[in-house]
Image 1 (cartoon, rainbow, N blue to C red):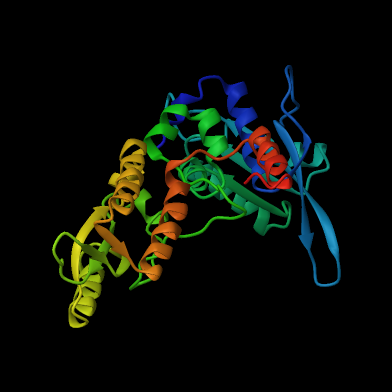
Image 2 (image 1 turned 120 degrees about the horizontal axis):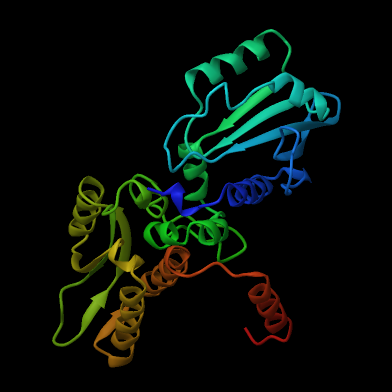
Length: 301
């Protein structure tokens, strides 16, 4: 899904590792710098919750960017692990790789941990990193380091105080998040009474997975005497132009007087637009947030 060759220089891979780990909540104790690094690219710490208190756990981070050659990181590249960890008074070791760790390196790290010589280790390989980047809250990082991938993936953005899932009304699956694996996964459907003259009724709206869940909701409303009079594919609405067109069509319907929404249906439409915007709109930067805050303080929004 992501092409890690978008990051060209090894030093940029180290900067990406710093920003990525900071996003995960680690404290960056020592950032990448030029010149000999003594076998570490980063030193980071995290606070561990114990049974009777907290303590700091320090990690030595080693970054290897083999995306172009696509070869695994071997033991020969990661030499003297124990000496390097001890030399920086670290407790554990993190490998941050744009490919994967070789079986030999994985086995070596397991042996060191099982022997009690290394408290812990973690490997952030390309697939694990990718899974984080396409999840909620990482869109800014994705846009900065993977601009091509960002445009292709269309990550979820935290537009409001937190992320709000767009759930299927039948099975509860988050249809926004599932778009990363299932491109054409869901629909929004409008149901109403039969058309009376020029008047069209929207009595209810439902969100559902395509197929079984959609059929279940359709049958549920049919029993009530309501039929589907319109529907839209959620994937189509991730296209910004089609999303705007959808909003304009809704406004035109309301203004025309030929459509009548129930209070419940109109409320659901508004909630849908807000939730869908998390897939279409950009996340606010700090300047945007400050502007939003100042306008809110003056009651302008």
